[in-house]
Amino acid sequence: MAENVLQKIIRKTGRKPSVCKCQACKNQCRTPCLGTPHDILKLIEAGYMENLKPTYWCVGLILGKLNYSIAMVQAEQTNEGWCVFHKDGLCQLHDLGLKPTEGRLSRHDIKPENYVFSKGLAYNVAKEWLDSSNFPVVQEIFSRLDVLVQVESELLGHS
Ligand code: SF4
Image 1 (cartoon, rainbow, N blue to C red):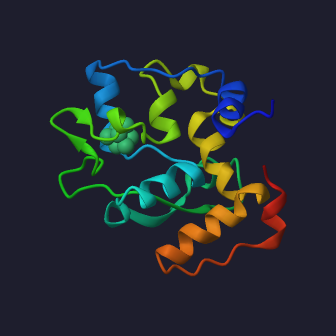
Image 2: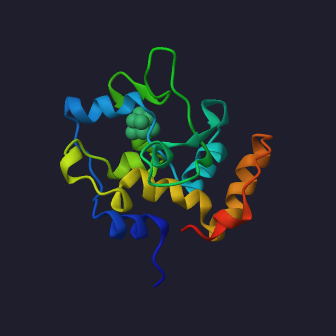
């Protein structure tokens, strides 16, 4: 059977689904976790478009590992500095089965000394937005949000 996107990211990162509720894990929800294009389309279809916004993933650029940023749509951050889906210490999306992939696989135990960029969870989720097999979904998302994003054709091979 063909490997799905979640299985691919688990294989590439070595991460496993986590339901850890320690304070360090909860604090990760200050910055919205990243979803793949399929994760984000599911949120739109579930009626959460108002909680999403276009953005760029620039971590690879800032770290000097990539020479481009990645255009995507992700959950908003509130003025109070939390992910818009974080309510009363919990993820609103968890019980709905709609939690984005980074949130599903993230744990508090990644330290700078054992961080390898190419195996990084955020990077492996982010680059799904450049995978040509996901382009129909990406285009659907951008058209639903009425966003015009120019993607360099040379980036399409980065997967
Ligand atoms: S979507 Fe859920 S798991 Fe992800 S950052 Fe927001 S509250 Fe946390």
